[in-house]
Length: 174
Image (cartoon, rainbow, N blue to C red; front, side, top):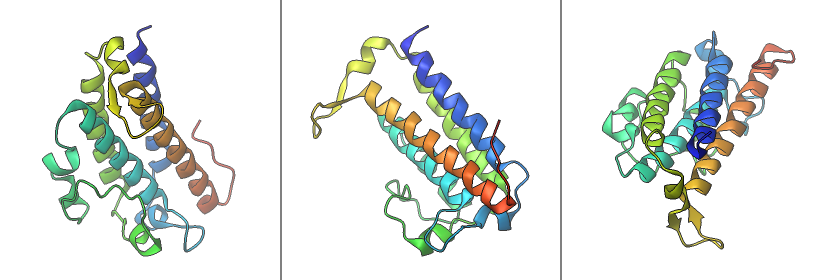
């Protein structure tokens, strides 16, 4: 197994979990928050996709799909490449309200495809390239990619948990 295959496997699992957590939800269910300060399934799906889009696009040296493919317009948001949901308050979270899960699935599918296109030719030696010296130890391509998989996996799990709450039962995506 090549080192990139571990990252690809992790992102493929995120894709599967995201799709399962969104499958069949209504617009109202997408926006459900168990508390005013909690995140909705819609926000979590959007945010994890924005983070992956931001981080992998930066590594690939290309514009984010959010901007390049005008996904921001489909979400009714400005074309701000720094808007990934970090620091959002309750009102901003509540504003992520797509009419159906399909918009979230389609945006993730586009970002996922771009991520795989970046990863396929990646060599293990490239994973050691330092990309951020503000940390000790400095952040490498490999560390950033593991961070993306970790962040997205956590948010996919949160989506499943919130879905379980809104359905009033224990719900696991598998």
